Length: 195
Image (cartoon, rainbow, N blue to C red; front, top):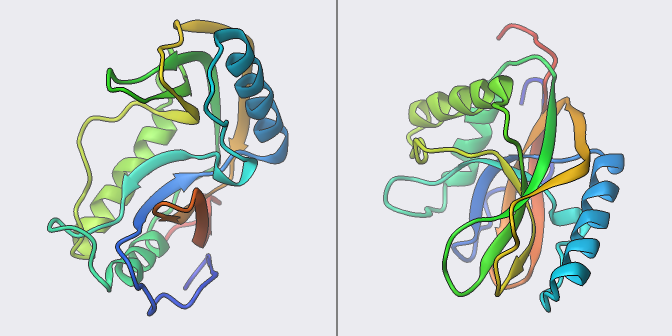
């Protein structure tokens, strides 16, 4: 796997867990995110537990076939991830808000400003997923990092201090359904190198 690291044997998928590409915050950004989640929970009386540092991420695109999860999707996603090249870029979130109107809603960090390099990375991944025989994911995209799920909405709030980091890589995540646990299957650096 040129330019990346593969962490697990991908041949053993016993259940249809979720697969997707994502960005992981660095340690400093993760600590700031956890602090915002704790304060949000207290301020708004939310009973749900914030995500742990190991689950914080910015989802880029699902890595599944157009017909749902298949046994070979992880291997195809690894091939797709290995083909993507991009330079490191800053990610900054300056707002806290709630998405959706369902009974349980994600409380997220988001940005009022467009993060062009993030969108370009996502587009590159979408193109490689199609070449690998997978679904390119939804066209609509609003970059965000989920902190916790809440039963009541949180008002759109500007953060006192924006939370950001230099994104220097992306990961393929396996979300273990029902276990509140994520496993990174692979990581690829963003070093701007040509394929």
